[in-house]
Each structure stands twice: as structure tokens, then as C-alpha cells.
Length: 501
Image (cartoon, rainbow, N blue to C red; front, side, top):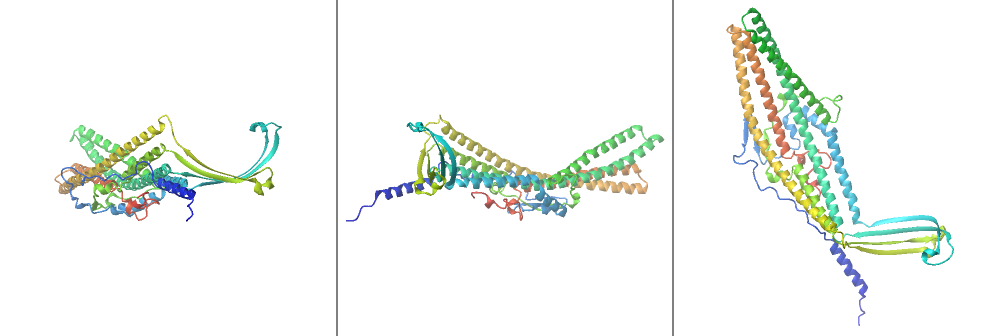
């Protein structure tokens, strides 16, 4: 007859198996990424043009074209590339975003500690006076020494997954900070390029305005001479003086804007305005990128930092629902301690000083006045709010791309109109100068034609700058190309770096 199997090991094995099964589960919802938008285009009605041409420079839109990692190099200005590199190396907003990312990563690593037992060691020495009355006995009090040497181990059995959901929320917070850093990276590069374009446009307008002032000054001198000779009314002099004053007054705002662009570029590069000056880049130096991307909406939500950030915040809210749900259930902790206690230091080496204990504690929330229940409902409400915020961010992203596509179409129209106006003004000036040399017109007509030409140049420069800046806006609206960057800041390399992907 075979001996009977002991029941105690069998029971222990069963309990262990149950605990392992429970530990593999976690209450609360498992996060699922929101579905991409079902729309396939950005614009209603008429499809966007696939090619826009102005001034002989065409821009082609193609959905298969990806956003380059260093898209600013497509503007063909080496000095611009150096400005962007300077900003990426010294910008303090980007440095703060990177530090916040590292902080969230370290917080996640700290949260992993819940998966391991906590172990501690204690060494103590005390002198006490005690009375037997505390134990229900009689007798005089006594004074004695107490030396302790002990260690303890404790472990939280995460049966319902509250700790795991908390770490899930910490991991999603890492995603939040990573995408905030990506957004800082994209915003920084766009600001440097936009500020450089604006600076070049302001300086081009300053040059044209100063030429206008010179022409208006000459024109005023002629009018004053004609008024003194009685061949022209004095009202013409007053009109020209007002025009000249207006031109002179327009210089100050242009100079201020150009100087503010200088200061902005210095600060973006991490330098005080007194210690660093941006390079001079004439407006005509900027090339117009020809092949422009138009990523599908389904791709847009997987590459824009603000959408990914909103998705990560939604993940945090989902994990918090699990944390709040776990608080409705019991918690189980186990532990043990052991050591030696003696009245004399040398007695700690004897076996008679050994002490030990083991414990298990089950804590169940029987009544909390509704705080746990409504805390979970509040977490669910927060998740629903985060989901609405996510959808709004997606809608805003689609709107921004749609606006930029239309803007580039209208920019091309504006450049064409300004180019035609500039060409007509130049032809009128050439004809007027020829007539002046032939003696068929006076010099005043030349000055008027020159003023018209300079005004046309100012309008043309503004249209060119707007087209360049809207091109920048398209790259930013499509995510900024951070996933294709050859040397991005640490932690921003690729979508695969996103936690939990």
C-alpha cells in the first residue's frame, strides 16, 4: 500500500498557483490606442491642387513624400542651417523638456521597485527603565540595556494589479514628457526658420523704404522749387511732405521688428542678445522647397507630437481608472523578520538571543463613506474628458493642415499678382526714364515711377516671405519630421521609443 501524500504541500502549491494567476491579472480597462480618423483628405469639396506655380517656382504635393528630418536644409541657406544647429545645442526650453523627460523616466524606474520585496536591516542600542506593572505584575522597576540586531523582508502581493496600473500610468507619463520634448524640438526649429525669414523680409523692406524716402525727398525738393517759381500749387508741396513723413514714420516699426527678430534668434540659440548675432541671410537667398508632403490623416495622428501627447495623457487617465478600481478590493502583504535581542552586547552572539516572526495581512475596505466608489467614478470621468481632449487635438491638427494647404495655394496666387505688379512697375519706370532722357517728360515723373516700383518691391518681398513661412507651417503641421532626424536630441529618436509601443 502506497503511503498517503501529505496534504500540506498540496495546499501550499494550490495557494501559490492561485496567487500567481491573480497576480497576472489587473482590474480596470486595458488601454487601446484610439482609431485613426476615417477621412482620407483634409479639404472638403474641391481637392487641393497637386502643383502650385508662381514666379516660375513650382511646389508639388504628394502623399507618398515624407517629411524630411532636417527639412530646413531644403531652403538652401547654409547660414540658416548653422542657426538651427546653434539653437538645438543651446536652447533652454529644449533643455528643460529633456530634463523633464529624464525625470519621468527616473520616476518610472522608481515605480518598478514595487515588484520586488523590501528588505531592511536594523541595529539598535538603548537603555531603558521598565516596571513590571505594565505586564500586570508587581515589583520594583529596573534599569537595563537592550541591544537588537535584526532584519525584515516584506512584499505586497499585487493581486488586483493596482501597483501595476500605477506603473502603467508612470510609463504613460514618460510618453507625455517625451512628446512634449518632441513638440519643443519641432517648435524650436520652426521658430528659428520663421524668425530668419521674417528678419530677411524686414530688412528687404527697410532697404526699399529708404530708397522710397530718397525718391520722395528729391520729389519734394522739385515740388518746392516749382511752388516758389509759381509753376505748381503749394498744396502739392504739403501733400509730398505728408507722404515723406509717413515713409519716415514707417521706418521705426520695420527697424523694431528686424531688431526683435535678432533678439528672438539670439534667445532661441541660448545666448543673451548682447553676446550673439544671427547671420545675415538676404531674402533672395532662401530657396523654395519644391516637393511637399501631404501625409494621410491616418498617418498624421501617429507622428504629430501634440496628438501623441494627448494620446499619452489618455493612457494615463485609463491607467488611473485601474488604480481607482483596485482600491475597491483587498490588499495582501506578507513579511518576515528575524534577529537577536540581548541585554549585553556580547550576548548577541548566543543562540538564546534569537527572535523571529512571520506575518500576513489582508486589508479590505469595508466602508469608506463612498470615497473609493466615487473616486473610481471620478477617474472614469477624467478618462472621458481626456478622450474628448484627444479628439479635439486631432480635429485641430486636421484643421491646421487644411489651412496650410489652402494658404499655399493662395500664396502662389498672391506671388503671381505681386510679380505681375512688380514687372509692370519696372516697365513703367524704364519707359519713364527713357522718356526723361529723350526730353519728353520731367524728372518728377521719374521719381513717381521709382516710388511705384519700390512699393511694388515691398509688396513682392512680403508675398515671398509669406509663401516661405507657410511652407514652414506645412512641415510643422505634418509633425515636423522628428522621426526622420539624423541626430535628434536624446529620447526623441523614433516612434518606437514611445513607451508601451
